[in-house]
Amino acid sequence: MILRPCPREKEVKELLEQGHWPEACAPELRAHVSACRSCSDLVLVSEAFQRARTEAAGAANLAAPGALWWRAQLRRRQTALERIGKPLLGAQIFALCVLLVLAGGFLVTQARQGLEWLTRLEHLPQASALRLEDLWSSAFFTSAWSPLVLIPALATLVLLGGVVVYLASERQ
Amino acid sequence: MLWETVLPDALAGDAPRTESPSMDSDAFAAFYARSARPLWAYLARVSGDPALADDLMQESYVRFLCAAHPVPALADGEVACRRYLFRIATNLLRDHWRRPRAASIDGVPEEFLAARDASAQADSQAMLGPALKRMRPLDRQILWLAHAEGYSHREIAEVTGLAAPSIRLLLFRARRKMARLLREPAPSHRRQP
Image 1 (spheres, rainbow over the protein chains, first blue to last red):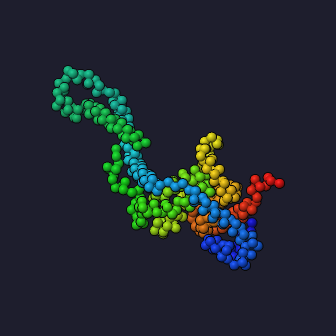
Image 2 (image 1 turned 30 degrees about the vertical axis):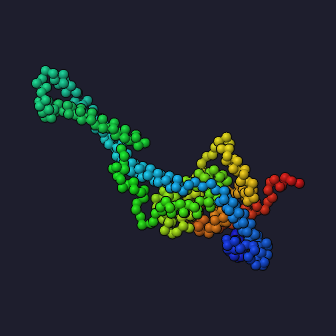
C-alpha cells in the first residue's frame, strides 16, 4: 500500500479536534474532503470514534476512588513485605542446609569411630562420673565423652531447624 | 514473625525516596474523576467487553498507584499521567488477549450479555461495534488512541510500545480499513432486498 497522506489532512484534523467541523469551516474545504479519500476517511473515522467515546464514557460504571486507593496501599504493603521476606527466606534456607550438612558430617564421623562411646555409656551407672562436676569435666576434656556435648547440641540445632522450616513455610 | 517490627522503615513505602512528587488520595481522586471515563471507554470499546473493562480499569489504577516510581510522569503533568495510565491499560489488554480463553459461553455472566445487548442499541455502537470487531486488536487500540483520544504518533508509540515511525503506516492502514468497514452497509441491511 502506498502511503500518500493528503497535505490538508492536518488542517481537517485540527478542525475535528476543535469541534469546528463541518459548520465552522470553509465550503472549499468541505468540497475537498468530499473529493479526497484520505480526508474523508479521516472525517468518517474520527466522527465515529468521537461519538463512541462520548457514549461509552457516559455508560461507565465507576468504582469509588477511595477503594482503589486503599487497594493500592494494601498491594504496596504486600509487595514491600515480600521484598523484605525474600532475602530472609533465603537466609533461613541456607541456615537449614548448613545444619543438615553438619548433622550429616557428625553422623558420618561417629559411624567411623565405631560408636565406642556407647560402651562407656553402658558403664555410666556404676561409674563415679555420675557426679555432675565429673561428668561435666569428662565431657569436655575426654574426647570419648564429646558426644555428651554434641548430642544435646545437635538436638538443639535440629529443634532450631524445625523452627526455621516452620517460619519458612509460614511465609509461603 | 512480623517483619515490620524488625524493619519498620522498609514498610513506609515500596519505592526508594525520590525527588519526584507523590500523589495523595485527594489528588488521586481528582485525577480519577477526570481520567476514569475516557479510560473505561477505551477499554470497553477496544475489548468489546464492558465487564472486562471494569476489571482492567481498576487494575490499571491500582498498578498506576503501585508503580515503583509513581509517576515519573507526575512531574510532567496530568497529560503524562494519563498517557502512563493508558500504557498500563494497553499492556493489561494485551496480556488478556494473550491468555487462553474459556471456550464455553456458560461461564459468561448473564448481566454481561444483557449489558452488551443494551449497548448495541446505541447508534455509534451499532455502527462502530461490528466494524471494530473485524479489526485486529492492535488496530483497534491505535485507532482509538488517535481518533478518540487525539494522541499524536509519538504518544501512541509511547503507549503501545511500538516504534514511532511504524505507527504512521499502521494507523494509515487501519484507518483506511475502518473507513471501508464503516461505509459498508450493516449485515442486517444487506439481507434486505
